[in-house]
Image (cartoon, rainbow, N blue to C red; front, side, top):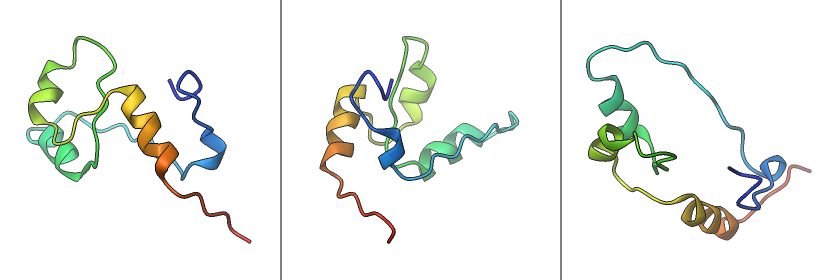
Length: 73
């Protein structure tokens, strides 16, 4: 998705992929802690109900492009 949207992953902050065990309240807590939610397919209806700010992949690309990039010296 990132490559298709023209996002340079190497210039982005670290991305953590975390596999959570299914427990009651997990999804609600995850969405409460997230800044944005990007639905990737039609089976995301449950997450859409829980998500705060929902953006399309194109909107995410525009949002990331507007973020200043600082590089460590």
